[in-house]
Image 1 (spheres, one colour):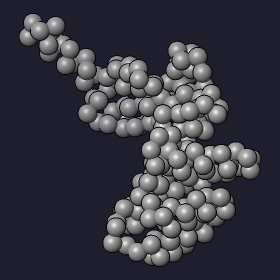
Image 2 (cartoon, helix red, strand yellow):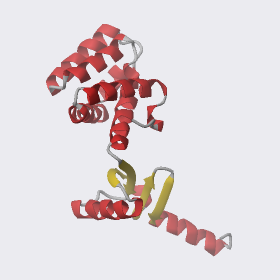
Image 3 (cartoon, one colour):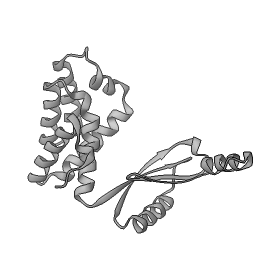
Image 4 (cartoon, helix red, strand yellow):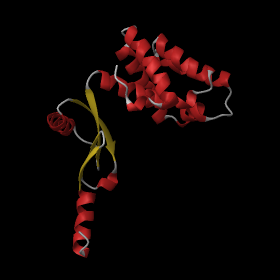
Length: 185
């Protein structure tokens, strides 16, 4: 596997170890599903984010809370052991980074490119398919689209693929027009 920039730091080391174990056990997709469930739970629950980040919550309380959650989700033993290790080492706070790094490594392993697409409103399935198809043609690889909604965009899209940004937002067009009218551009 090639090195990935997402695999740096503490979360990168844990994600790399998890990826290698999942790969050798032929459980890459199982762990991916587990981590996506966990990620969604972290996004939706203030209490869970508090369990992850609070230094005053004891190791045992963290471990019991996470074990109960993982049992409820029915995740794989590999995912349970990884989260258990993070609890034991008092490093549960890196779990969101581990999830992100693992998913990034999996995409790179599969030759996929992740594009962050920001729009003013949620996109329909047809719009998502059109954006994905266009990006695949432009990038020349399979594209996984990470959708974000930001009303400040006003209209259009802002697409980030790697270090390249394609800004076709109404906000940017209006800013350029304002600068042109002031004689700056």
